[in-house]
Image (cartoon, rainbow, N blue to C red; front, side):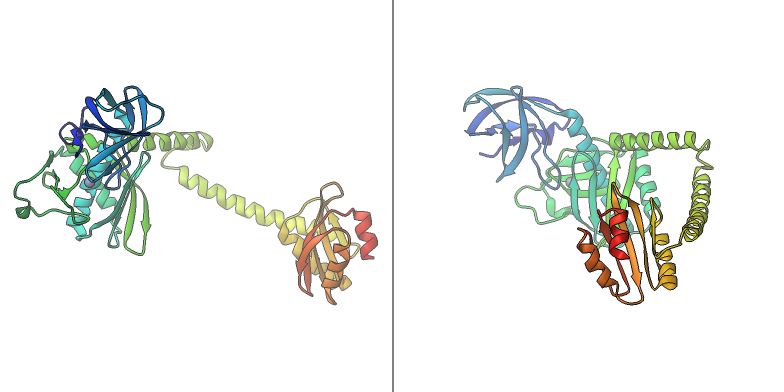
Length: 365
Ligand SMILES: [Zn+2]
């Protein structure tokens, strides 16, 4: 027996009564339900049946199956169901929002929605064409929200006379969702009554795919929370940089440029210092930049024929780079006999050794 979909007619209701008509281990089937199942790219409603948490809701051949954990429900029981309204309303805002967005994209470019997914964090929709005017789309969608257009869900008698967007061929009775002046589309999900309820819209990521363009988007409370989070982060940055929304980017860029200049200067000074310490084919230092380890090794090879730089100390071990005008791989064999790891070519080897400075100098002399 098909489950009566109470959410079709009562998308704003949270509580309902129903009769258990089938129990199969942890699967409960009711004569009617407010629980929207996972369908059409949207995750299912959550909530309780007689205070027992509903973990998942699926639909098969128009029968809605509620998955619960431990329960004592029996066929014939009258139950009280309750759905998590915060989750449901967020889904309604973001699903109606996706219809509005897709209607606007379709009217602007003629592109179709080729995939849609809505979870409790964000919505994702993909269109079969390249879209670049992101600002314009956001502006139009937000404008349609201010206009507070009516959203009408119905099962039409004369479907053939209605021109609507649809992702796939639908079997059985087709439910139409119309956003006045913006979109007509087939859909089974609960929707809000007016576009004003969508609050605010923001695309948070644009991904250009092989099929076209994918948007990750937020409507309503989700968008507000994202704005608030971002605003709080920005406030911390303004404080940190003693700046404001006009000057922050300029100040961060300036700091980045100064940092890069200091890094170049530091590398130069470190190299000069390391070169001043080179009185032997092998130099041991506590720490240095990798680029200087290589450059000073090149210098040592030039002066001594074979040489290298060991970075570290006896306690932690050393990362080494050694070069040779002859064959550095011979030195690698010697180092490996001291439990060292590494690899390279005839010209240069590198790796790590746990051996002490004394052991290394003895082996390499
Ligand atoms: Zn839909």
